[in-house]
Length: 151
Image (cartoon, rainbow, N blue to C red; front, top):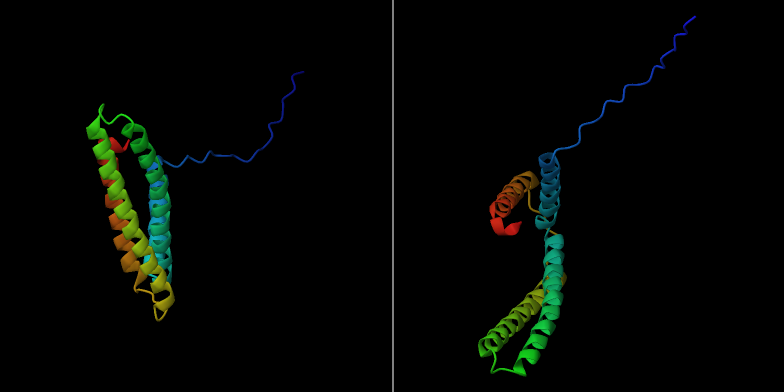
């Protein structure tokens, strides 16, 4: 006698389709636009964000300057081999130093604003700004993706 096996009833686990790359990118862009809008429409957050940005760029620039000075030191031992390289490195270093000086002034200015701005201000309506931020970020992402050098 043949036995029939009972089939267990199991809940059908339909596989959820994986999100497409475009859907993930759209969610990432939406999240970035929301965060940016929240920061840029609040005076306190905006000042703090740009203060940190100036400080971050300064830290990175100071590290870059160390390498610039090292390269100049190395090539200065034999300027007869490549004087144009030494000149270019020297000019780049001077420009980076000027840039860091300007960033220092902006960081100090933002820090002063943080303590002297009369009150915590918000721009309304936030939705209008969120749409603007989303549009600008979308345009910039499109430009980056279209740039063959960005890959």
